[in-house]
Image (cartoon, rainbow, N blue to C red):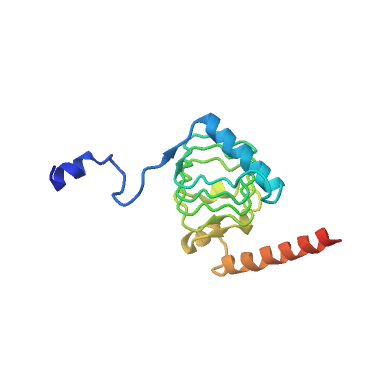
Length: 169
């Protein structure tokens, strides 16, 4: 097989250097989410942190899903329903969010710096969207200052310090 034949064998629209997205069944996704919920609630002592990086979650129904601190980098979340999902501290770098519904989703501390297909109107449907991290271009679209990400980093550190002080009492 020559190089031209190999190129013809590649799926259309897939970059040569990008791995194929992992597929998960609804049952497997439910198991992953349950293990992640236990991991969050037990502060890492039970369950397992969700690693949904490079996973195809297109049209997934993730209503009220607990995805706090989950790895969702490079995931395909096109048209996913993330209604009221807890994404606090999740990594969505390079995730495709085309048409994803974020109504009421918790975005505090979420890394959206290189996420694709974001819209200002879609992001502003979420909770605490002002406390997420965005690319410089998207900051302008949202009407946020250029130093927004640095401000968020400081604010999140302050909130974490307050939480630790409250927990210690």
